[in-house]
Amino acid sequence: MTEGAPPDETADDGSTGQQSDEPAAAENGTDAAGDGPADSATEGAEPVESDSDGAASGGEAASPDSDVPADVQKYDRFKKIEGGTYDRANDFLRDRTYITAREWAIARLCADFRTETGVEMTKIGENLPELVPFMTDTYTPQAVNQARSAFEDKVRKAGATFLYGAMCDFFTAEDLDDVMYEATEVAKFLLEVEGVDLAVEDEMEAEDRISSVMREVREQSAALRHDEVCCPECGNEFQVDE
Image 1 (cartoon, helix red, strand yellow):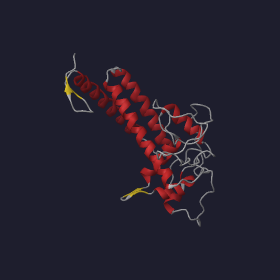
Image 2: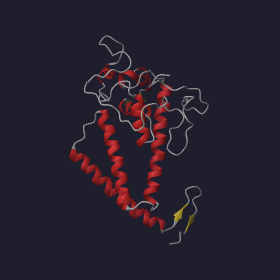
Image 3: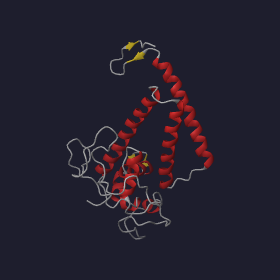
Image 4: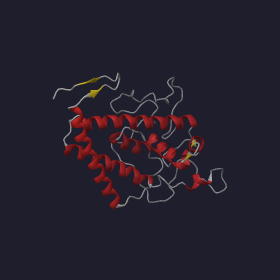
């Protein structure tokens, strides 16, 4: 299977297939079944940016008289990353996030090609190599939906993990500031690779707001830990000893 190729779709649980040489997924932050091709590049390598505006996509470039839709031809995200660098992008994401390059790209496309009636999954799948330089094969609508679902599930689990860490008094306020700073830097880098132009003033304002929110979370969680606690499963309330 080539890099950026769609996963097998034979899994009984509805998830995407898994390469035979990829280790089984675990709930400790490794990728769930259905992730993209095996990662063979150097661990932690960052996506390589390209100075050219129209980086090759691994497939044939869309010509004016092709069947590629006009909005696909005009799509200009991911132009800072070279074609054929799926493994390097994947390694970068694996080292810093729960998601894969496949899930990252498709989640962005699902956000950009959302209409009032839903996401244009067929358009995304059929034109994937033209939309994202490091994706080299077309996807079925089912494979697009599976990648989008995997992205959403991982974000929810990562969010719950982070919030518990922030609320359980394991981290000091300074520790939480460090965690949020690192997370913000990774998120900003991914946005910049996608082509988002972030102003310095906006970055600083966002960081200040995030820091303020996290201080509030820590203060409120401290009060919660020493108050009545409600079980999320049965709804019973019980007292917590100070």
